[in-house]
Amino acid sequence: MALRSSETPLPGSGLTAPRPQESFRRRWVIVGLLFLFILINFGDKAVIGLAAGPIREELGLTATEFGLLASAFYFLFSVAALGVGFISNRMSSKWLLIVLAAVWTIALVPVAGTVSFTALMISRIALGAGEGPAYPLAIHTAHQWFPNNRRNIPTALITAGSTIGVVVAGPGLTWIITHYNWHVAFALLGACSAVWGVVWLFIGKEGPLSSRAKPGTPAVAIPTDSSAAAAGGTGAVRAAGATKAAVHAAAKQLRKVSYWQLFRSGTFLGALFVCFCHYWSLAVLVAWVPSYLHTVMGFSTTEVGTIIVLPWLVGAGGLMLQAVASQWLMDRGVSSRLARGVFGGAGVVLSGIAIATLAWGPQGIIAVVALVIGFEFGHMIQSVAMVVLAEIVPDSQRGAVQGTFLALLTFGGLVGPYVTGLMIDAAATPAQGYQHAWGLLAVLLIVSGTMAMVLIRPEKAILRLQKAL
Image 1 (cartoon, rainbow, N blue to C red):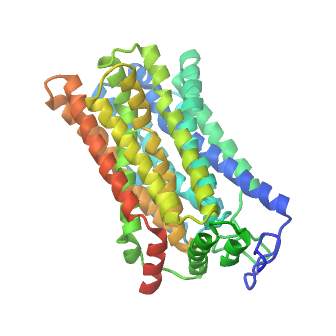
Image 2: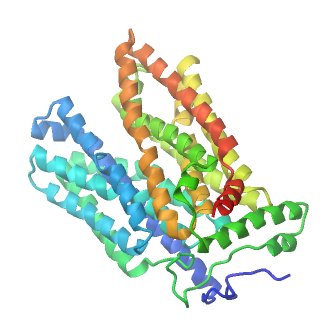
Image 3: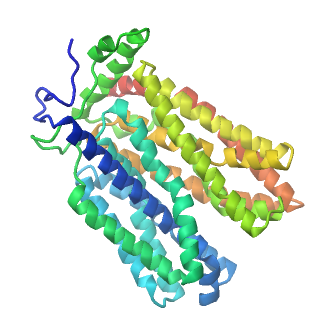
């Protein structure tokens, strides 16, 4: 039986076949632009921390006032992610991304001049509202260009924009702040957003797997059961089962599912809990780990600046490892549950074990290695969650679901740093407080990673949702 490929029209779809090279090039250009979108997104988040000293000095802020300024970014973050997620069900993601880039520019460019504390506060609130929907919308847009069994790598690449951003944007913005001033750094980020928006205006477009794709849009390959038979080899039988689930997901694209049934599914809840715990660790990495390295482990400021980059590099490596390994496994007929859920959950469990080693293990180089692995290796679960949600949700509802998902999981970023601070203040010494905080985080990661391995079952979720229709 012949394979259904991007070189032949999809029967009854109204989609036409592009030239293979043109289709390949277009989808990866889209991924590259979305990667840059998230990289800029990270720079916008990070600049307030990088410029903390100069901002406090210029505006005469206390630590509490600056903390309020930093937190202002999240005031509308989750609300905006939720709202834009549902809007994306009805509005083109191309134009929504342009609107977000414009909001970033409008929020950042005025800060190039002299500003008051109130003006800077309003800027951060507006910026947070514009950036809350950024990640889920970028992933939703990319998924319009790739069928389910080809979403691992593009999702990981776009997610890696945040981790690579630490290595690229962090030192670059620090250099600008040091050699010029923090106003220039803010203005430069605003200009980058504007340039990106103009480029996206001419290059970005809805993907062929979008529910709004028009007849004549280039088709993208959707594997069928015949793919497994054609693949041959010892995995052919398993491949048939795996691609059968992909066909179920593809067929479901034309139907809507109950949000209530979806949000109470084990796959959604398992992904949400593990990502909540991971976001907790991510926020703690940004807020507390530099202080831990300096005050407890005794590293100098320069050494801390070097060491703090390493977890992000490990995170980027973990993202790509998961994507490539999952793709390899699924090509050989392994189920999405094993290739994505179990693999990603195992990464989070490994992170938890490393954090436990940091809390209760020996100090020195072992503690540094544990810290580097523990705080970012589990970042792969973010990519896994977005892919499995896209797998079980029709395109017409994907933006709303992924936006809701992000809005909920980011509460881990609000809770984690605060609880860590409470535990440090309650302990007899800072070192003991950090040990307690790391111990709690280790338990959360190990438990949530294990639950993800058990609960994330995309194929089972698809069948249950179809029965509920």
